[in-house]
Length: 173
Image 1 (tube, rainbow, N blue to C red):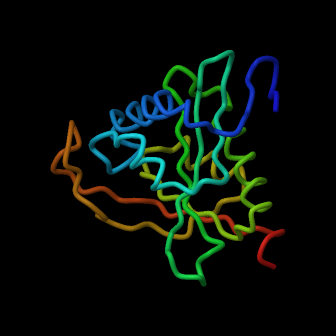
Image 2 (cartoon, rainbow, N blue to C red):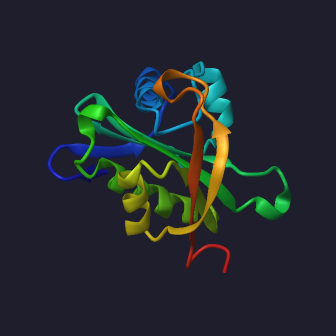
């Protein structure tokens, strides 16, 4: 799917592993994208995310960002609820890449029967909060001092997390 003049959305492939993990590492380095301190190997990353609803945005042969889902619980009652992971390369930020990835994820998640998408975002990541709100997510709360950061410039600091969710008007009704 071509978006704009040169950015294309496509299904993520295992051959994207290096680019995906590099972008994830950039997110870790910001201190505002994840509690993770280290990039996992591809097998661990791959097994931790659902096989459907994985998308990348690319320009030419360069992956600019990616989006994927994680199942929130193995219980059958939560089979239609997933958590969003979305990352955009530092060189591609503020260009609408996150927005087009999230839009495509929403469409494919509803086609796959997901009725609720949720995200946990550090309050300092205002751009991510704004992009989620733009696509129908609402803030459902804040988890205060959820976890203690264990690396980099944020080491030893408690972090809050904004909980956001989007309920489908198509799936699960």
